[in-house]
Length: 334
Image (cartoon, rainbow, N blue to C red; front, side, top):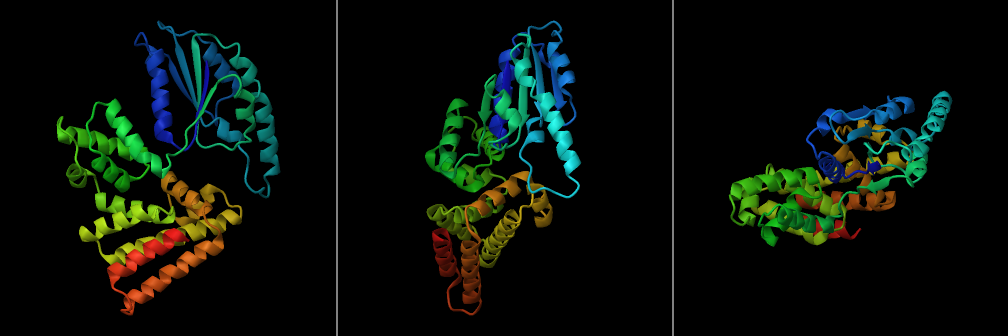
């Protein structure tokens, strides 16, 4: 059996991989019959030989290959001296295209899982093997789906959480499923069988204020004005300084503008991350997603509105709290 699991939602992808492992491990011997391979290094011959090897004292062998498909994704803007590398890549692809035929005669004892990050629609190897295996793409949850995810996960785990607490958790953490799952586990242990309420979330969610600041900024950029205003008021009630909140919004828009300019120039995601000084893949992808929502003229309009708010507060034209709420409202409409 061949599976292809790919996409930016690494949490759901890994959960699906764990589910596949659980189904195969009927005799408790799968760990001794599991191979995890680097797709950038393994050859087609090596992979097929491993899949052909009979499992030891078990009914199944699991072979997981990380990053193979990404090798053949559509390249960005051509670079000097890249002709030789492209030729080598083309030759390698020709060798790997035989995987589609091999998958149909692979031993029934073998399960091959190709795991990768986000891929382009035109990925040639994905196209070749897509019809002979089960292909699943894992995309990040849309903001409106996070609350439903929390409630469903809590229900599946036998956890009682109030809708208000789930909504607060969604507002604070956003769609980072790794962090959401971790915080929900901590809240479950903290509640000790009783219903999880909003007070529990406020008391326990790690670095809640910092997380909610980023959630507020994301909500502004993604035009979720009601959520952004609610988070702004919660932060102000908790004692967050208005100047700091404004600075965080300015910083995010500055990063988005820079990212948009670099995308227009054809730079790769890795290059953009280096130039922006961002080391987290999750944070970088979030900024790139947000940059794609806006044209440069609209981003510049937003930035001018930020400057107006900053000047208005410093010159005493507006009360800080009123200025921030007007700013959030205006930015979410651009």
